[in-house]
Image (cartoon, rainbow, N blue to C red; front, top):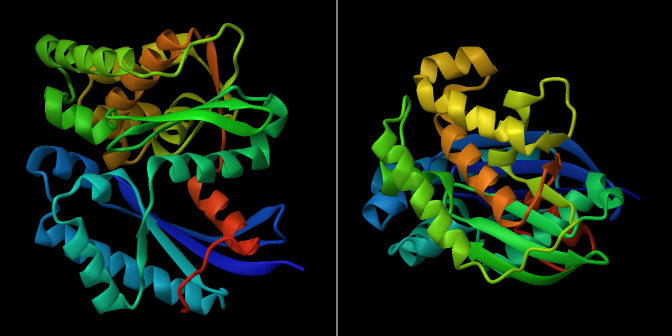
Length: 303
C-alpha cells in the first residue's frame, strides 16, 4: 500500500521539497516546491552563509513543514549538501533550523548524495544501463561510476555553477577573459578526478542544472542531449544578456543566469569521459530519499 512521505534538500542553488506517495518501488509526486537560494555562489564568495540567506532557509523549511503536514505525510526528512558542507557556520545554521522549525537537518556526505541520486534516476533510466551518473549543482558536481546498478566509485568535484561563477567572474554576456578563466578552472578540476573514462559508457544526468539545460534545449521532452547541443547552448548564452536568454530559451530568470556555467561544465564532463550524449533523468536525490524513507532505512521528523 502506498504511503505519503516528504523529503527536502538544501542544495547549492535551491531549497526543494518533494511530497510523494510511494509503495517502495514507484514514486508519485503530490507537491514539488522550491525556493531559489543561491548558497553555492554565496559560500564560494564569502565562506559562510549570511543572516539573510539563513532567514530564507528558515522560511522555506517552515513552509515545507506546513505543506507536508497538509498532505498528511508520514514525516519530513530534510538533508543538506555541498553549500552547507562548505560553509564555516554550518553547525550554527543547523542548530537554528532545529530551534526555529523543530526539523533536524542531516548534513549528508557526497557518497550518500550519489546513492540517493542513483536510486532516483533508476525510476526512469534503469533501462539505459548507465555506467556513469553526473549531478551538477551550485557548489559541486557528483560523479559516480556504476556497474550492474551499483556505485563502484564516486567523486565530488568543486564544479558547481555558483562556485564557477564566483571564482571566474562568469556573467552574461561573458567577456573572453572570464570565459577562459572558467574553462581553465573546470579543466583543472576534472583533470584531478580519479574516475576513469571508458569507451561506450552511457551517462545519466540528474539535478536542477541538468534539467535546466534539457528544458532550454528540448521543449519537446526528448531525453537525450548531444554534446553539440550543449556546446551550442554555451556559445549562445555566452553572447546574450539574461533577459534575452529568458526569451530565447523560455527559462526563468534565475535559471537563465546558470545556463552558461552549466553548459560549460557538462560539455567538459562529456569531453573528459568521451561521451557523445547524455540521458536526462526527471528524478534524483529527493525521489531517492523518498524511496529510502519508505523502506525504513531513515527516519523522518514528524510534521
